Length: 336
Image (tube, rainbow, N blue to C red; front, side, top):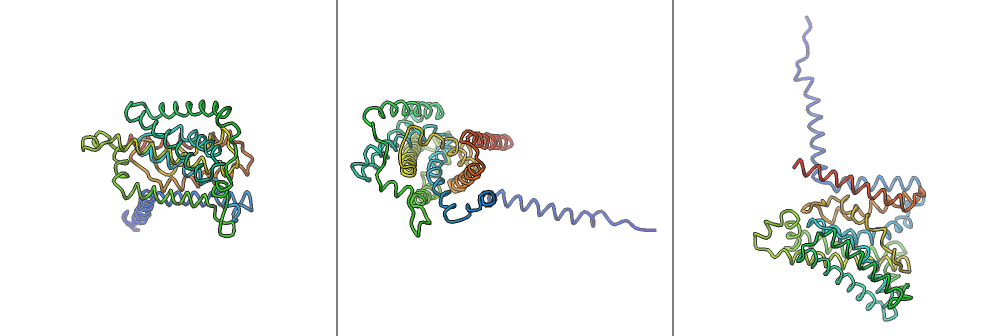
């Protein structure tokens, strides 16, 4: 009479494989950066298969030139999203800063860059005051700021800024030039410096911890005696300055400025932060993931360009990415 194999012996291998699967999933959940790196590599290989010359120094340099201003704009969104906010005016701030830099270029690159950054400083301050002291919803406040800036600069391009469409050569070199045998763009070094500073601020300083705490539970932060208005105001000011820097880089890369200079970067700047793991509800995320998100979107942009996909459809893709990930975060929040 034959004896059947005990269930424990047949089920043990299955239980072991399930355990390994759960461990692998848990490891990836604890290290989302690895997932983003994997996505980036896959997209880069796809781009290389579509356009054979893409995986060369010249091809990768072009992608980095695209990623630098996007990454800086996404840095502004990351800071504000960590507090549960957002900045819909950041691309218009970038455009305004570019116009002022072009207008002041005859006075020297230092003056042009400084006054361009002042645009971001002023606009960011106004956004911060509106959101912090007048309790205007960030979406409404920054959308209104975008409209105000568009109206002002539309009028000024016909008057005080008339003819200001070219930035100085030094700004062009910083924005579009390269070093080390034309391999590494200067703008990437600017982005790298900003990235290191921002990562340090968010991870190693009290200000960074308060940014996370405010996004996670603002009431608790207030009850702890923290002046939340200072944290929120400083975040909007920093976001405005980052937008201005990105605008100046965009102006130098394209060589000229117009009122649509940075408009196409609004959705990608939000998408890069969301792809990088920054929650739109605040308190979760970081700039390291946003850097990879910006690189992923830049490679994706290259793929769509190689496939002759127009700018309109690219915006649709970015919008779908934001909606899908926002829906995912909302589901995770409900389950939490």
